[in-house]
Amino acid sequence: MTSASPNPLAPLALLHRLDAHDRALFTRWARRDTQHGTPGGTHGGTHGGTRGDRHTDAGARLWRLVTHLGGATTTLALAIVPLAASGTLRTAAWHALLTLVLSHLVVHCVKRHVGRPRP
Image (cartoon, rainbow, N blue to C red):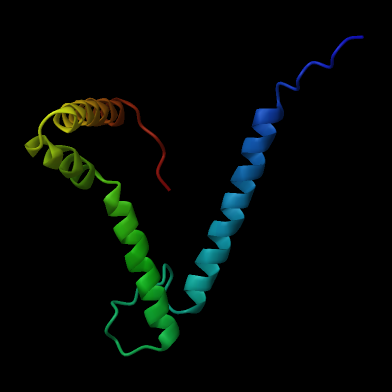
């Protein structure tokens, strides 16, 4: 008996299905936001709109907050704060800070030297 060899294209098929799912989800969200007002769903918050507008504004603010929580300022600050501690926590903070700084430098260099088309 011979066992069937694994399909080498299976991971690609999974990636294509995930991509299609993500694009469909994004399209549904974009259409919903457009139906509530301006594209993207941001209205400035204080124009006296309907409850739907406020709901969309709150969602946009939430996603902006989540986006910024993953940014350089937040991640570096969270690595620097534990440096005031002692022992293992301080050592871990130094390792985290070093890793983040090196990561940001690599990304900066790559962005400088590798172009990509913008929409």
